[in-house]
Length: 198
Image (cartoon, rainbow, N blue to C red; front, side, top):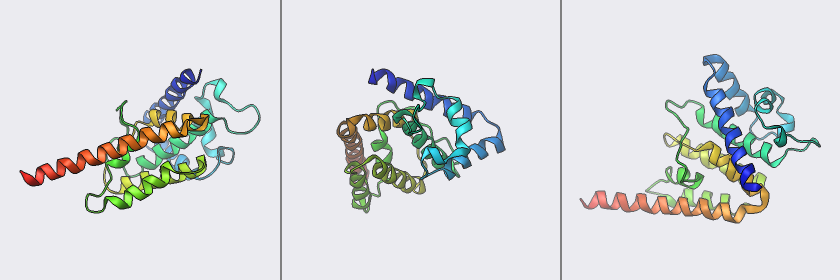
């Protein structure tokens, strides 16, 4: 059942992003600005995003008691991160890499001269004690990586991961993120060392 829901979270996230991507100039900019302005607010206080958000969610994802469902929460936070990445982006920020998690994306922003700085922030992400703290650190890390250059994220995959974490799979997801982060980091370091030696 969780696997089926994860597929639907993927599909709903992808569908909303595709609809935003298909909007024209100022309308697209306005929708992205609304999503960015909702950052840090609970969904219940982000009335500006409700029209584009609720319109495309499957009915079974919608709250029946006024509290955000895990599906709503995962997709909402992912859309905020998508809007953040789109701000000032000169190229696409959407990756279709099905195999790398957000850990791989964050590793791409690791400073070769001071890798420990990003490592400490990444460790704060994967050791966060609750979901709100985790999303706070995630937003911060993505902002850092974005400032260092282009960023590409598989947003539907990220929404799936955030949903899975809320369903009680935090250790599993953080292990995957850490595996992708550190294996990418060390591959990059070895590549840099090889380039220096040639």
